[in-house]
Image (cartoon, rainbow, N blue to C red; front, top):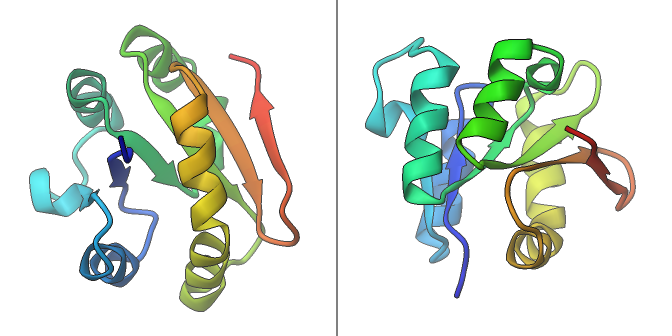
Length: 128
């Protein structure tokens, strides 16, 4: 079964649209929630639906409430790490890693956070 992914406001909506057009099961946060909805609200949604988070909000892992939200709601998350990322940097990184993201999403068991680096193919599971 192909995983279903949820992209937050830190990701370009055009990327989500492109993945959808390519037949991927993806959803953009603003298609479901109003702008600036608190992360804990949609983390509960992810837990209920089993959707996997894709974000570049690297600080989510250091925010105690959001980290607990990932744990409590059994959320899987892929977080893109890189400084000063433009839209094209993000698009290239996610598209270039998409097959590996799907592969890992199928093999990992939530809750988890996987760090993705912009450069190279480095993926690292982060301890919660």
